Amino acid sequence: MGVMSIAMPETGERVAEEAALDPQTPWQTVVWDDPVNLMSYVVRVFREYFGFTQEKATERMLAVHNDGLAVVAEGAREQMELHAQAMHDYGLWATVRRAPQ
Image (cartoon, rainbow, N blue to C red; front, top):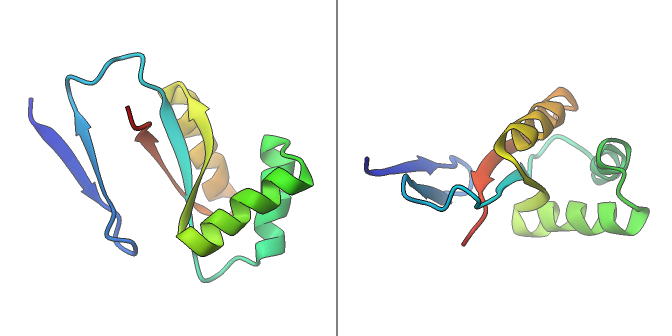
């Protein structure tokens, strides 16, 4: 198998996944910046869904706002997919990717 490459349209970031990656490498749920949701709403979602403290939720929201993305969870692929779907249900744009090795 070769390399699977996915381009994120707004950021141009490319995520490459090698078939030979260590199966123990965790996955990440990434929330992306969008022009729609208020910063206060994103903080509220992170607090409600992930149980983050106000400080941690604000830190992650600012990463989304300033850097264009933030990793909000890391673990098994299935759980990260559930988190991404939950973020979609809240109206946020989220994806799942392998954690860097």
